[in-house]
Amino acid sequence: MIILRSKAEIEKIRTSCGIVAEILDRLVEHIRPGVSTWDLDAISEELTAKKHARPAFKGYHGYPYSLCASVNEEVVHGMPSKHRRLKAGDIISLDYGVVLDGYYGDAALTVPVGEISEAAVELCTVTEECLYEGISRAVSGNRLSDISHAIQDYVEKRGYSVVREFVGHGIGQHLHESPQVPNYGPPGRGIRLKAGMVLAIEPMINAGGAEVEILEDQWTAVTRDRKLSAHFEHTVAVSENGPLILSKRKNRFTKRFG
Ligand code: MF3
Ligand code: CO
Image (cartoon, rainbow, N blue to C red; front, side):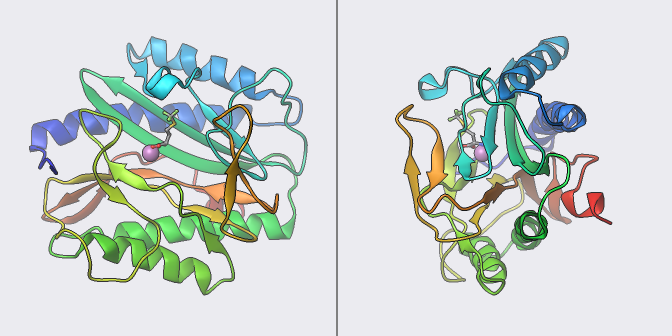
């Protein structure tokens, strides 16, 4: 069942998303060589507590941390570790969610650590751009897979591949609600989008092949070929006036590179 949210509910989701966006912006300020992903998790917890919110991922299906911090070939669900210290040239995907007053927000971005390669810049740029392509199709009257298709088309035309094993999702009173939002597929399929639907759109894009595997920790997803992967996510409401990005941040990857 896909729930249509009232304006008041969307404002609650926006509040949670605003907290997530602010925390991601703050985390970005801490990204530099030598910082551990554990430190980032601790910072996110502290900032969440200050907002009187609760981390959405902690305890979700047994996930033990607040933040997902996925470095280089890690696609998603990278677990914070004291031993994982960032180094110049890395890229790190930060995925964060909170719940406040019963409503969830969820967002992610990939950021450079110091100087990164041209190839890494390009991957992150295309991943952020394809998210915005998908968001532009989150319009009342479109079909769900119009979002999926726009993302896949944009990415594959540029020589990258779309991860299939993880998808976006409806969000509201649960982190994951109906419908699933794949980042691939033919256009014109699936439910018709309506004002009041709230979707977390989150393409995960690989520099090499699309295949992923899960490490022994049972969480960290990595590219099978160990090439780089990037991830951007926004929580978006379908409205009468087009898509509303509820998790807007200050940091846009592409702007960081002019
Ligand atoms: N943004 C991710 C998602 O929506 C993060 C979930 S991580 C988990 O699926 F630990 F909560 F599973
Ligand atoms: Co999500």
